[in-house]
Length: 86
Image 1 (tube, rainbow, N blue to C red):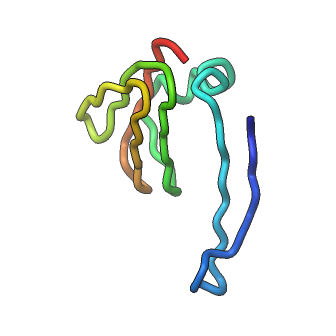
Image 2: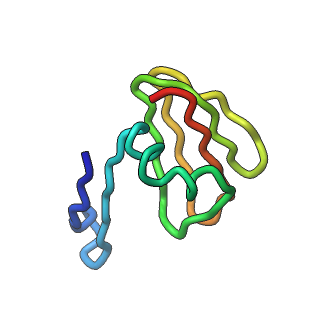
């Protein structure tokens, strides 16, 4: 599932928020090369693992991903995603 709606943030009349939702399976299939290498974004990235496992490296620290875990990556943080099973 992919959604890219744009909305105004409550209380911030000129701030637009863009949201994209991806499954781990889709990330693994379509963005494998990007996520296997350490990289940075200029936006907030929220990773919610409902089911599946793997690891997420953020600023050279490794976090184990498992069922029902949530991670927030802020702009500029170096990160790398290793998906073992979606």
